[in-house]
Each structure stands twice: as C-alpha cells, then as structure tokens.
Length: 415
Image (cartoon, rainbow, N blue to C red; front, top):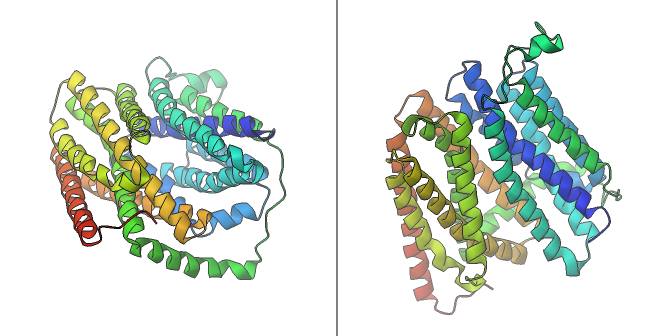
C-alpha cells in the first residue's frame, strides 16, 4: 500500500463514524427540543441534497485541488456544522452543511487512492476502504444510540461549563462533544496523508460545460439494457434503504416501545444483515448471472410487508436481519453489473458520479415522501407494508421484463 494509505483509512473511518452517529444524536435533539417528528427524515434529506446538486462537478473539483488538503478542510467543515447545531443553528441548515462537506470529501478520497496506489494493489485498497465504510455504518449507528442513552445525558452540562445562556439547553452536550472529537481525530489523521499535486486545473469558463455532458452520459447509461436494469435496481434500493433507516427508528418506538437509544441498534441490525448478505453473494454469483438475483428483491418486499406488523422484539430482530441480508444479496451483484457497464460506456469517474446522482436523487424523493406522510400523520405500519408490496411488484415487473429480453436475445452477455 502507498505511504499514508492507512492514515487515509483511519480518517475515512473516523469521519464516517461521526457522520452516522450524529444522525442519531440529531434526531434525539429534535425530540428533546420538541421539533415536529416529520423533521427527522428531513435531516437526511438536507444531508443528501449536495450529493445530487454537486454530482456533475464534485469529481472535477477534487481533481483541481490537493486532495489531502480538501479532505482535511471538509472534516473541519463537518465539525463547524455540528458546532453550529449545538449553538442554535437550524438543524436542517446544519445538516445541509454536513452534506456539502461529505459530498466533496468522497471523490477526493477515492481520487487519492487511484492516483497513489499501484494498479496491482488497487482492488485490495478499495476493499480496505469498503470494509472501513461498512464498519463506520455499524459502529457509528451503535455509538449514536449509546450516546443518546440516559447514561450519557448531562442536563447540567451547560452550568458546569459556565455556558448557561450561551447555548440552547440540552442534555445531549456530551454526545455532541463526542461527535466533535471524532471529527477532530479525523482531521488530525488527514494531516498525515501525503500531499499530491492537483491533477488538472479546470478554468472557470469550462465549468458550465460539465452539466450538459453529465446529462448526456446519464441518459446513455439509462438507455443501455444492462446498465439501465442495474441502475434502476440500485436507485430504488438505496432510496428504499434511506427511508428504512429513518422509518425503523420511529417504527421501533411505536410498535416495540423502544426508546431511540435502543431503536438505533435495530438500525444497525439491518446494516449487519446487509454485510452478511453481501459477503455470501460475492462468492456465489458471477457477473454474467447478476440479473438472477432479482427474485430476492421480490422476497424482500413481501417480507417487509409482513414483518412490520410484529410486536415481538425477537421476531423484529430476525426479520430485519433477514431483510438486510436479502438487500445485500440483491444490491452487490447489481452494483457490480452497473459499474462494469458504466466503465465500458463512460469514464470510470463519470459513471460513479452518475450512479451517485441517481441513487441520491432517489433518497431525496423517498425521504421527502416520508416527511410528507409523517406530517399528514399517516399510520406508519400500513405505509411500510405498502412500500414493501410496491417494491415486490416493481422488481417482479423488472424480473419479467429481463427474462423476456433474454428470451428474445439468448446470446445477451455482459459485454
């Protein structure tokens, strides 16, 4: 591995850990400050917006500056956003700033790896990064749940620190301090990443041309039979996953009588299932047969429609674990197929940007719909049950369409 690689890995892990913990802490903060419940999905909505808005330019921006400097500054910007939230800034504005920093951090991270790592080590390097991402999701969610538990709350923290009257009254000050400590550690790790020169400057006059090219490439990938199929599945899946990330917290409170601190562990259970399913399917499904995992999505949707009606904690844990595993088995082959077709049709960086744009646009739509449903006080269990049935029906239609296309073109392959 190149010099500084494990410093980058540590910075990525710590920053991701804080990103996932702060969502749980912020939801607890909304509840404590008596903001409307439907603001919870809007936190994730505000965080994701920059990923969509900046998709055509984030990669070019990362190439135009020193990547280790950009990553360090984005961690500092994340810390500033959290500090602003504690100081009384609007929660959605704070999360929009967090999302802006995260959207610019990601292409700089992957770009540094590509530029610094020999080709023979590139797959291993990306494997290390993906493991750190998964671990940050699991542990960050669990940490967030722990930090909002009564054991960490300190109602008198402002008085002890002499900050009465300076900050909004909150018992979550220790949790926010822990999140800020993670961002500070990540920024410190970034300082040890070797600097690399900017790859290529992009004159200001050339920036407007990035958008038309992006839309043309986006349409080209959607029109490709295999690219469009895999893009449709992953786009739907990640929108569905983001909705479930928020909805599971509220569902656990309503159906299982769990506080937010324990409901966060159920959220981590889904992520653990995704990891298990991804590991299992990665060794058993070849790229040219990736389309055969579509029936798993049908089963996933049907199981969700049933599982949300349980009131037993043990059944809920088992159901969420299986749902996560089915999701991992569905999305990994589809993601591999999408990356393969994207790299064949487009530049690698552009195909990843297009994938991120579509998946995050789906996240915005799903979370916006969830926020509207919660504001209208629609019952959550029938809503999630209908979502599961819709997913099962949609993937059944895709499965039927794919089989028909392959019957018409029996020699179709991933070429």
